[in-house]
Length: 584
Image (tube, rainbow, N blue to C red; front, side, top):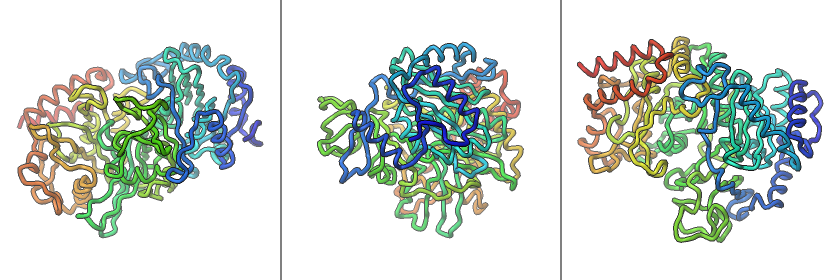
């Protein structure tokens, strides 16, 4: 670890680090290099302090257990601010604070907060190091835990620093765990300045500033200025038995199977198919010179939810965390192995390290694992391609018990923007304690779009105008239920059957049934080989209830009212056209 800035470090970066040090007053400054030696030293430091507990080396080699403060276990959206110069630019979808007031508040919190601590300078790259789509950042933090997680989640170290030195362009992120007091916890974003300030939390989404803060909130704003999209999307590659590969991006709200789809295992009844994971959470999309939309995954690792991840539900995810993983807020077995709900047996200690009681949950419901993407058995090497991958399809989805059919295809790009803008999901008890509450989450970006949603949708429309060969846009719903509350579709690996139908549509192998909401599979075109699914169930899965959809349009227009001052005219036209189709 370096105690001084490496030779050739850009003067603007040195000046900023000096200013932060003068404000926070750390005992020492360390410039992170991203080396294995540095990782070992920081890991040993956390083990010696008791913050890390080594797991069973025989079953979970090079893996560690970490517990966070009980009051610091998730993102804090109500304390997350977008501080644009004009409040209107932040939009109703964000909590706004005037930039000067926000900086004053944060400076008071940061003053002297690193006394007795180490200030770590963490240079990082979001995306492949040599990609024109990649962007760079520097996070200053007083948490060794954050440094180790950032090393997994980004391309962190001297190579990133050299890129920053060449361009002088980087997002500044200042973080301190502070005293972990929720009343003194704020995450501030200043999009016009490419600046993030986070105080009072050590939790991933609040503290790993390259993730949601940079890669979505700041990047979405930056992408609008520079002509690209930062999206809360997975990326996967689909190779058919004939050897043809298509790349797909997909956006889902929480609890809708996003990670499972990213790491999908083909069912045995569909031999010859191969699925590769390019990314599980975030995608940056940019029009290419060939008229197609190209995508990279800006992340290098996974910060995944552990509970529910099992060999049965997501075999690839379960396999990849069997070593070289940081586990946060999971329970522990007697054999010093991580445990969470969904795994067999019972733990010895809960997520806070206490002997378990009669009632769970024993792992925190938001317990996490951090692991390098290359450990995923389905990892796609295309994730390292500096050119990215060309998209054949974009998929939106939600959890709807009755309204949305299994799959439908948007009529064109602009209609697809409406499909994305209308994404909604019904909550589960695991999320809110209430079942069936409808939440509108446009493009699955409501917590993450760094500016006014109306301007964001207009940016989507503008991007589409640049594409001569745009990806097709689809909507899926794996969660349609019978009147008795039973899921009609098996999901998991069988979702490949729906993706196969999409590919046939992309390759123009099959026609589709035209409906008011979009194109849908004709009878016999959805592969049911080896699947026990009778005609009546399939009919219900693909049924379009016009009355229900007309009611949905009334609800959608109500939900869009807060954005009416900047709602694109194209989107209004698409709404009117859909309402007209539903009436006739």
